Image 1: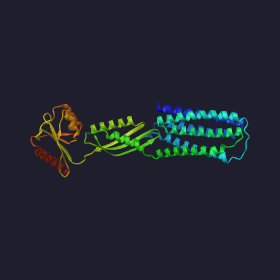
Image 2 (image 1 turned 30 degrees about the vertical axis):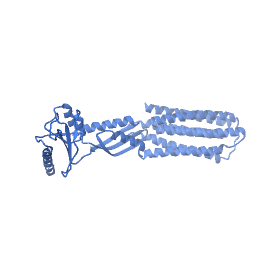
Image 3 (image 1 turned 90 degrees about the vertical axis):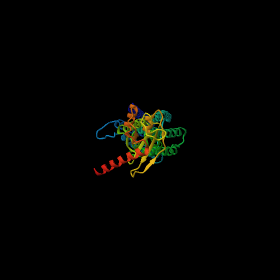
Image 4 (image 1 turned 180 degrees about the vertical axis):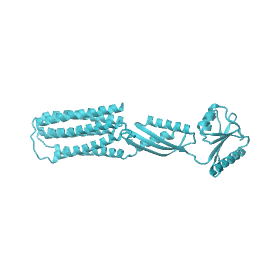
Length: 393
């Protein structure tokens, strides 16, 4: 739908510039107004620019196996070409105002004034509406084309001032032309700068990147963002994110990443793709959680009221965390512990807890020990044996 709207706006711009080119040229020849003829040439340059814009918008939507990332940047190339036309238009206005020595007598200037008034009204409203549409559709081509039509409006103001001056016997159009040419050059520079930035894969705006970071970090499974890169191509944006996640099963991690990517696409407009690379936050060491009663005796999933978590480094240093009181929602608390091993008297009977442990890649360690210290040494001994075996294989 957005693509069709873009094409309609560009096609409308093309027809408008064709109409204005013919109208100004005809009345320029009738009235012998050099300014009006120059405006006809300027409008013709707008017509050429609109054709380029139309081709750019059409081609940017094409899919090709040779261009797997799309042809979106054709829009930015078209915008860059339009900026060159803006520079050319500014140059032509200055040349006409200061370096043209041939004197012409304008006949019936009131006809030319009416034509310029019509041109001003049409270009003013169309450029404003097209720019609004360009921002709404996030189309650099529509915005660039709107700026070009606005430049046509400004140059029409110059010609109109000159014609009114001719009507009253004054010649002040060249001074107004110099001022407006500066605006035209400025518009061309801004469009060129933005186009080159996109073609060189300049990053997204800081505010937008921060908004994306907030979306990502809001998820409880995310520990940190290692890096986030974004770029634009035409109307669309591309993201590459590297995440640190709590230790999860591959299936659960993939589900969470898909969920985050979908949230980004819903809240940030015109996202074409989100590529997320994720890795576990804890790549070394072991986190062991013990299910106990208030006195610290090891219990099963059904009777435990507390959970105590130990972090064991690769050098077997032990860090004990404060006990956590278990509520009715035991599966959520256990899952959020991000433990590698849960030590209990037996495996859980509740399917919800079993499933939560499975998707979090948490192993259940059954023990006959009563005290945490004894069971902890049991786990560490087995882990050491596993490490030694892995090292020899």
